[in-house]
Image (cartoon, rainbow, N blue to C red; front, side, top):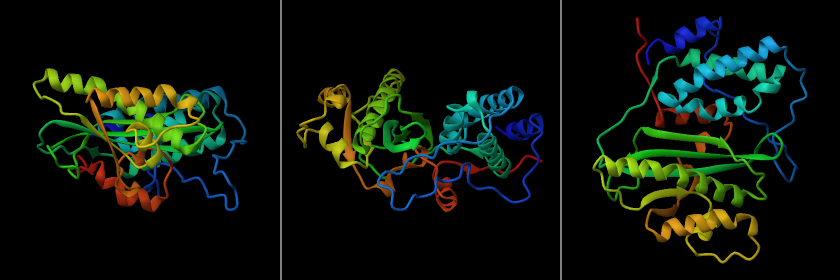
Length: 282
């Protein structure tokens, strides 16, 4: 979408940053000695209604761009959008950093390569990464080849959403992420089948052994009533051979990028796995 970000920066009168900004958001600092790493509370002063309206306009403009060509913005936009109605000075600083990131990478693109049109997905979650004890689910959906688990392709759908309910553990958050991603995969499977591409059981990869074990019956739950609906849905769909769930190590999970705020080095290293920087239009 050449020129889209350039026009957006002019619209919101945002100057080009003096230094390149390669991180859409700042990572939450580690609280050493704390048993639970929670998102810090925002105690900065509130914004005026006009400033809040500007943030809402920015989110509305960028969310279309993120869904179309730049999924690296998804997690940050979702986090900002969840707090925009009660905007604070800290939130305004986060929006400024996001605009600086867009100005540094103004012409992103998604590269698709030939495949067998087989839907695959990676699922991940971050526990207590959002304010008020909430967690985030992430998903990376792409079209792959038969029997080629390591094949990479441009995303046809990126999921980055705050889990509605408060999760009691990291494993429950991972199970909820599997639930969210499996629901999102159902209409994609139907669409591909109606286009003439028969679908084997969709491969969904997770990096949590407990979520994988509960879903594939490798574990027997003893006190998981709060998870019942989710893992029974997943077990039911696997029994119908709609999905097949795999466990793989965290560093291979492509959905991890969309679940939390990472250090700048992580953004720089992994950005190329999701988007390419197209030549700037003269």
